[in-house]
Length: 280
Image: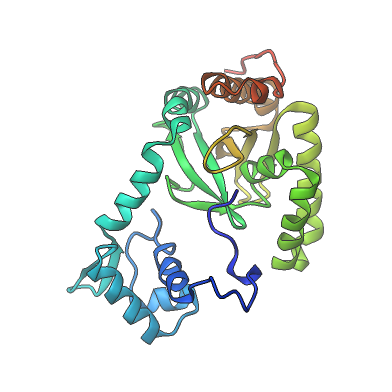
């Protein structure tokens, strides 16, 4: 299950689809930890909606409490209404509560960040995020989105899908960027093999050149469908040998532990048991 289907894939004659609501949600989705405040002009450019439409939407969302407006700067930020919706969704999501201390321990050990993600269209969205105090990276946080096709957490998600489920999604990835597809496809195909054989996959500079990461899927009965964990950080912090011998077994172990604590024994049994050879 995905959080929001790509609007371009919806039938043009779908009478159940409320276009005005979609435009309002499109505005809300523009905000993130990297873009905490936005102007009407920035929202117009980012959503491909006219300035007049954006003006009406931001006015309405502000009146309803989903945005707050700073008259001095003319910029908007998410309001209490939007934050309450997000909290209501995540507060009952048991896997976050179970995983959080394990994720923090692993982040501290690795000197990196550990994330739990679900799919949102052609992106993965951060549901939980823990970082070592010493970690350097991209400054991401809960609610931020990263690409599905070129990150380890996204590739782990794809690897956990059935062939039947994965095929239309791969077609969508291809259509989204045809010129990049040959290289992207090779990375995804390698990730599928790696998860099947080793339990994890990697992205070594495939998304951001200086960032290395590894991902492990978690297929439990969650409201967000298939989930994935990853460890990410600077390439200098996460060299391939350390990933293979030390961090991959630890992330697989974390994922197994979370699955067991959630009572998903079948999901835990699908993950290999790998001995840890500490590289620290």
